[in-house]
Length: 253
Image 1 (cartoon, rainbow, N blue to C red):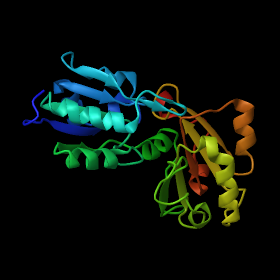
Image 2 (image 1 turned 120 degrees about the horizontal axis):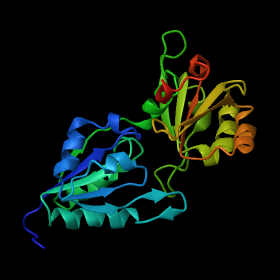
Image 3 (image 1 turned 180 degrees about the vertical axis):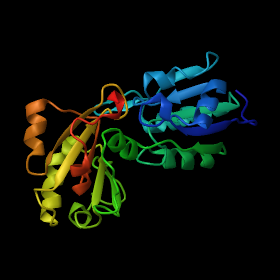
Image 4 (image 1 turned 60 degrees about the horizontal axis):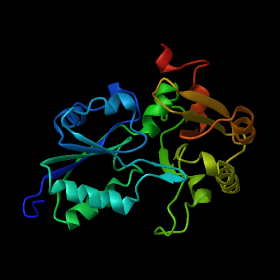
């Protein structure tokens, strides 16, 4: 291993799943990469864009099942950057939107490894769009808050202040919130958000498996139990949900 000459790590956003939403720059890097270290939510068609010469490494994480710890993944990136000139870290969505790309960038720079970020389309924008839900609308919503519903232990503050967020904007888009949704709804209600507020859950957004479940904050928990609706899914809360056309699904148009 050459310790004096390092390659470059590209933190590439794979988008939400539909291979047509992969950026041209990201696709080009996959085709010429020497090694690609990818996440669990990177779809199979996008993994199919990886060039045949590349070493492929699964570093995916799912709730309760992590193939690699974050520290191990970062160390692997550093090691591969000493072996290869083009190292791609392929992450679902956008690397800097709840993707831990910022943490990886900091660690790589501290280790003396050159880094470039290639943005991807985040699921918080794409999944509602494919379900026919505009997250902004001149008559219904001029503001959007993107927030994680699954926080890391020991982070910089104990938890999201859902009560403050309840009145913070007209549309809320929650990532990774299905497992904590009942608690989140209770906090939003305590913050003044009516239980009659519409909510949409979009599962596997932009893929052929996409499903949408629509209700209100009062009904959605029971609907999840009745239908067996599970993660991964994006939650959209606000009046914009009412704009969703009955039966609309971009994948079927």
